[in-house]
Image: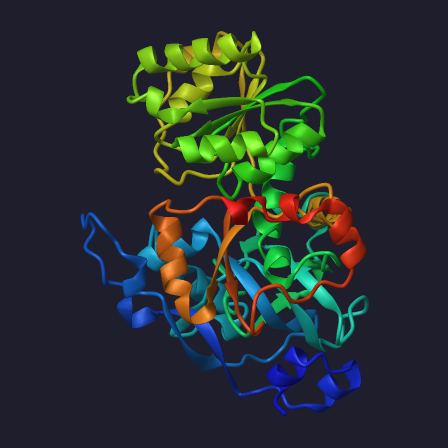
Length: 432
């Protein structure tokens, strides 16, 4: 029996420890010799041309790292950027990292910033985790000896997004993570449900709830772009759970219906505002928010970037905040700065989440208070198709990927909690 087979069979930790770690493993990866695949002005940089699934070499484990047998993973937009080689090829990250850790500077880059699985090996310095532990991963890869990590790991000079700025990510049968990335798998979730949460849920938590984000309070009106997407689906839940008033922006009647089923009372169809680059559209958007809830948003939850940022700055209330963690529609933003300085608004940059914030949101998930936004699941062999669906925005919520798990629906350890939470809530995005 191989190590992978033993994990799938539910072998005891002693047996897992006895079995050999394979020399190679199956993974979704990029190839360095394909970096020039796309022309700069190519209109459709189809990620299926560059994202491959095949065998890659198994790395050595550092003292503070853990080897996970991955049962399931998920697609994040950083995988799409990686496979497009934008804004720069991620091999540049690996080359830079390779100056201090040569293991990562390889001709292949294994992608993926989410995973759920079983610990199968631990480095000598790892104390809190054991072979056989069921875990989920958080995406921040930091040096625990950097003093600033004790304050906020996201301020670390060498902060890296695992599976994007490092190698050996989660879209694979095995993955290498630091011990400080691990959290207990929520016991009522399946492997694929558990694997889809941490990057987006923790990012949304830091943006809205964490000490370094917008610090939402009860009664705050929060405008959320892409409210049924990977980030927005968790943002809406956090606003509702924290006593805020979510106003979700979506791009279709079907997504609007899903948002209402989530309990979001106020929904805006983005199609009403055809040119968000113009102040006339910003004014109409602001008027629509006031019509719905009677006031301007205290917080605007931003991640779409170029297409929406000017509108976000405009519609935030006097003294309000725009909190941004990304730019899926483009990094170069334009806005009228008068609406920022004259009305005392703030722009808050937010990137990922530190270990404590990840712990906090994983606790909410484990209690059944925040639910997966998983909408569809692909096999690892279909990772390129899964990434393409995200690239074309053909999805809602999160797109999952099965790695070693032979089927969906496995991995539930607490069926009682699952029953109390309810299948309808847990599978809301699946039913959509």
